[in-house]
Image (cartoon, rainbow, N blue to C red; front, side, top):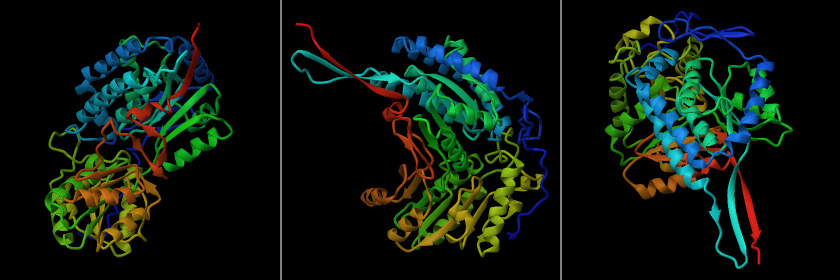
Length: 480
C-alpha cells in the first residue's frame, strides 16, 4: 500500500487531432477507431439551413405521428443492443458486462419522455368562461443544438434529443470525438424510422466551429453536457443573444452515512457509486462522509467491497472496472491522488490486488483514501476517476456543512433508516437530487438538474419539455 502511484505514461491511447481531422483511439488496446473529418463552416451552414427548412414541415406533423416515428427509432437502437454495447466498450472502455445497460437506459428514458410528452404537449384548456375559449399550447423553438459527451454517450444524448424532436424541433447533434459511432448509430436509427434527413443531423466539429454555431441566430436552443470550462465557453459564445441554454456540468457529489445505516449495504453502494464506469460519471460519489459511530465498520466494509472489483480488459465478461477513457485523464487522476497522499492521506488498497494496473495507463487501480480534509483537491474538485476519499464526521450539522462547502451541486446520497431525518437534511442540501439508500440512479420521471457549478436547466420529467418549447396563449372570443 505504497504512497506513490507514478508510472510511465504513454500517449498512444489519446485521440489524435488536427485542424481538419480527428482519430479517436480505443482506451482498451490503443487501436484506431478511424479518422474522421471535422465539418467545414460551409457544410455546417448548409446543414443548419436544411434544419431550418425541415422545422417548418416537422413541426406540422401530428404529435402522434412524431411519437410513432421516434418509437420506431428507439426500437431500431434496441434491436442492435449487443452490437452497440460492444462498440461502446471499445470507444470509451466501459466493461462489456455493463455496456448493454446503457442501451436499456436509453430506451427507458426515451419511452418515458414519449409517454410524458403526449400529455405535456397536448396543451391545457382553462376552465370555461362564457363566450371564450382559452388554451395554453406548447410551441417548438426551432433548431436545437445538442452537445453530448463520451462518458454516457447514448444516455446524455437521449435526454434532449427525443423530447426536442417530439416537441416538433429539429436537432443538430455534435457528439464527443471519442464516441463518434454513437452519433452515427442514432442518425441511422432515425433514418430507418423515416425521420427526415432535414430533421436530425449530426456533425463533427472543432470547438471554434461549435462556438460559431452557438452564436448563430438560426440556433434556437443549446443543450450542453460537459465540463464547467466548456459550459463557460458556451455561455461566452451565446452572449448577446436571447437564446435558451441548458448546462449539465461538473460534480463533486457526496455521500453521508448516518449512524443508524446498514453499514455493509451502504459501503457496497457507495463504492459502486465511486467506481462504476471507472468513476467517470457526472453523479459519481466523489467523497464520503461517515458518522464517527460507524466510521471504522464502514471503512472496513468499503475496503472489502472495493477488492471485489476486477480491473481488466473490458471485453472480458469477468471485468467490472475497465480502463479510463484516455491516458491523459488517468494521469490527472494519479496526480490528484498523489497530491493527497503527499499531504497526509492514507491509501487503503494494495495495487497488487489489481494486477492489471501493471499494464499501464489508462488502466488505473482504484483508490480508497482516509485521513483526508477539504484542503485537498481530491475533496474539493471533481476527480472523475476510480477514487473514493472517506472522512469521519461527528454530526449531521458537520456533514451538511462539509457537503455544502463544495462549489458543485448535482446530487447527494444519504444512507440510513430515519426517513424524517433524511427529509430534513435534504431540504438543507443545495443540490439537484437527494438520494436515500441509493446513488447515481436517474428516474426519467424526475427532473435532472444541477445547481451552482453543476449546471443550469432541467432535462427529463414533464419539466424537461419546458425549455424545449415556448408557451403560446390562445385567447378566442367565440362568434355570437
